Length: 120
Image (cartoon, rainbow, N blue to C red; front, side, top):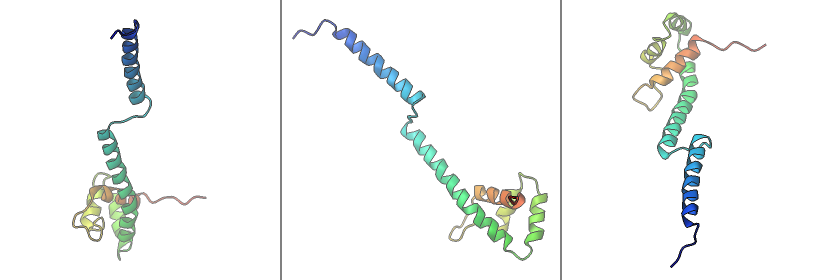
C-alpha cells in the first residue's frame, strides 16, 4: 500500500493542531481537569453552606437574653478571636450537628460585629 506523498506533513499538522487546541482550551478557553472542577465544586458548596448558616447563627445569638452585652463583648474582641467567641457560645453548632463549623462561626461573628447599615 502506497501512502500519499504529503502524509508526513498532514500528520505533523494534525499533531501541532492538537497541541495548539489543548493549549488554547486549557489556557484561555476555560477548560479544567476533573480534579480542578472537584476542588471548585467543594469550595462553592462550603461557601454556600456558610452563607446559609451564618445568618441563622447570628439570629440565634441575638435571641439570647443578654444579647446586647454579648454583642458588645464580641465587638471588643480582636477580629482573630471573634470566631472563637461565637464557637464557645454554642450558637454556631446547628441543630442535628455535634461539631461547630469554624467558618460559620467566623462569618456569624462578622455579621454580629459589623451590622449592615440601613440604606437611605
